[in-house]
Amino acid sequence: MRPKICWSDLRGARVGVWGLGVEGAASLARLRTLGVEPVLVDDRPPAGDVDGLQVFATASSGLAALKHCDVVVKSPGISRYRAEVAELEDRGIPVAGGLGLWLQEADRDRVLCVTGTKGKSSTTAIAGHLLTRLGYSCLIGGNIGTPPWDPRVDGAAYDYWVIETSSYQATDLPCSPPVVAVTSLHPDHLDWHGGVEAYYRDKLSVCSQPGAELTIANGDSDLLRERAGLLGPRVTWVHAADDPEAEWMTPLGLLGTHNRRNALIARACLDALGVPQARDDAALRAAAEGFEHLSHRLQPVGTVDGVLFVDDSLSTNVLPTLAAMDAFPGRRVALIAGGHDRGIDYAPLAAGLAPRPAPTLVLTLPDSGPRIQAAIESVLANNGQSGLAALPCADLDAAVQAGFDWARPDGIVLLSPAAPSFGVFRNYRERGEAFTRAMRACDAP
Image (cartoon, rainbow, N blue to C red; front, side):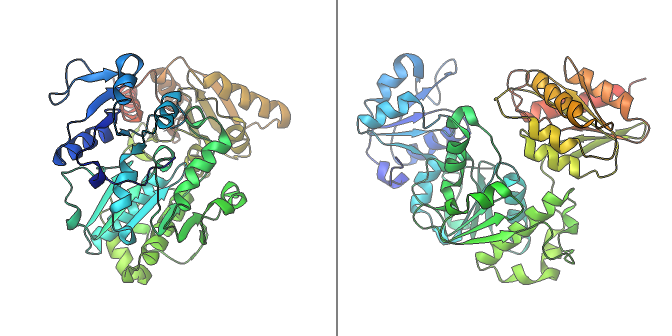
């Protein structure tokens, strides 16, 4: 159930804020501008209070506290499929998301939502950069940047909002903006959504809520084409090979054909929003200058003894890892893969790597490493691909050293894990930073 309420409706209500991450903090701040002192609940509450308010633990007194609220605003990490959510809604208590509350009262004609299993961060950043350099004020927010309902954001100051929208956030949206972009589709977050088809349905729901008019979609994705019926009333397909003579995106400095497609999707979105310069290659090329690469997304971090090290820690699924490998055709690549095991199928990763003509060594890490290893060994047993090999490693430091030794004198060590970082690292950033430190250790005397 997606409550059709907005932030302004919460003035004078008893409101619970469930989850105290970045969005939870923004929700608390927004509610205080409305004169509301909310009930704060978190699965792992911090020690002490938060801004003078007590924080209840979900598992103990938190759920009981939420049952006395008129509305609960949950963070995206709280799965809509949890039993506690159903219990609250059965009691008639709407459980909303901050993005949905904001979108319900936003000027949606000036909002672009960008979703996709992977590529959404890059496409969001490209679209926002182009708009800004073309002279428009633009907020890049949602799953990347600042939540657009944060009171520190002056909504009147922006011409456009480019909102990266995760599958978690999509489940909370009561409406859609007229223009939505979908960059890719691949199994992900199955534990949160409860299954692959539920994930696909939830992810693509942002395309078809009330207000949806046009979806700009990755035309190279078979999974998206098979689910065209979930993409809303009208679809424009964008392919990496479209407009082959176009060079306006060159100053973006992005690696890989998938990023060329992301740039073309961003351009199509600007055109759909009515931005006149979107059809002017010279204006777009000038606007593309100065683009800042996303950290930990196919980011070269250094060269040691002729070996290039590339941090793609943000790749937490098979699809972006294969795209990262495609960015280095003909190059000898030591791929570091593995991490938190969400149960996704790694057979497509092995199948995608097997035909690669250049030598490829996959260095597998716990916890999903053994399943990646098994998938590669299965491929090798079936087709005997001699250019592919796999080696289990105890940790990231060991994998970096092994990759460096193998990749010399002129190869690449690529961290593109096809798995999240949870357990060993707090997040993909910490993992990427550890990768860079391990690279420097290779250069130590």
